[in-house]
Length: 188
Image 1: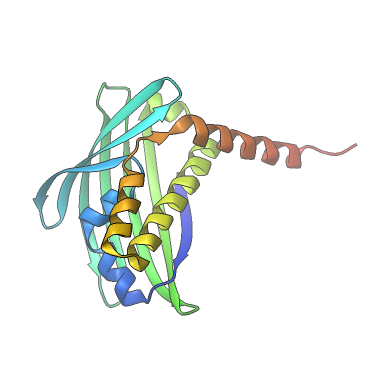
Image 2: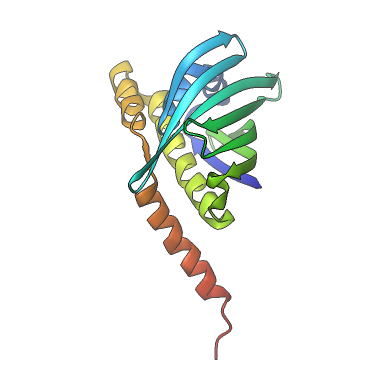
């Protein structure tokens, strides 16, 4: 499945690009993610915790920077994740691009995501809605990092360290899915 998300940050493209190239800070801004190991300058191991009501999932993830075009401000990452207890896996290619916009920077993220196993049982709409909410939280953390004092930046990172709560995200995503369904129903 292909997911496209965009957001703006109130920082010039050079500052946003410099932050996006600091993988440690980026992983720390991803809700529920934790950097476990730096393999080399373009490969990392991370974990991501997701809580779906009473079910907690922990994904062991290999992240690799595949391509960087500094002049065009484009980067491509690949991620291979497996649930620690064997309940599924995911593969993703994440392409990010930055453009100057309204005195700040627009960040476009396109993700090609493939799910397998138990994690693949969630519907596409739910995955899209949860993904959109995660990108919003990610963008908020980046914005705070770009505009913050070191103490404020650390507080933003610590707020993201909590596992992603799928119950709240899922409930919100379910409501959006129901609204979409109701809009599609023919009216009498």
